[in-house]
Amino acid sequence: MNIIVIYKSKYGTTKQYAEWIAEELGCEAAEASRIKIDDMESCDVIVYGGGLYAECIDGIALINKNYDRIKDKNIIVFSVGLTDPGFKKYYDTVAEKNFSSEVRDNIQIFNLPGKMIIDELSLPHRGALKALRAFLKAKPSLSPDMQMLLDLCGESNDFVDKNAIGPIIKAVRDIEQV
Ligand SMILES: Cc1cc2nc3c(=O)[nH]c(=O)nc-3n(C[C@H](O)[C@H](O)[C@H](O)COP(=O)(O)O)c2cc1C
Image (cartoon, rainbow, N blue to C red; front, side, top):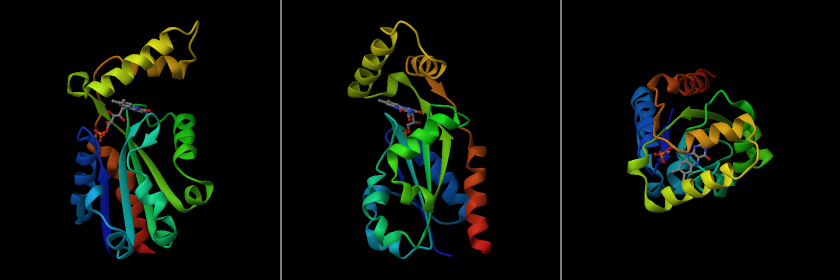
């Protein structure tokens, strides 16, 4: 089976996961900008990973824009974000924001725990987080998920866990066995 792992990563977290997944599957991990539609069309399984930024999966247009030409492939998407992957309601919203219902019904989506080191962030990203913090702090009260967001965007955190790729590897193995 022809498998490709594609990633888009601003600070290296998604790249690290993509490399671990590719190593486990014995295939190539390629940065999204190097990928052409022909590369995806020649594969049976496409694994795409992108960091989460304001609930958008980085570079996901590569999948969405080319969807009509790759919809017969097995498509697996993984996001990498700071929000706890166990937070189902949040990730349901992320899926709705990033994909049409047709695409959602035809792909498998996984969410992996990310990392953010404040000192490594670009100035625009630091500014965006500062503005988000100010916006949240100005609210008279916060729901638990908004409080979590406020806590997460104000400090460095590293939740990266190699074991988190397990379900993705299993999903590919299951496809191979069909
Ligand atoms: C400006 C900014 C916005 C972010 N937005 C989200 C978000 O909406 N949800 C989330 O869970 N994590 C969010 N994060 C955390 C990133 O998803 C996390 O740092 C991830 O590991 C980045 O992956 P990358 O290094 O592969 O780009 C954000 C980080 C920054 C700097």
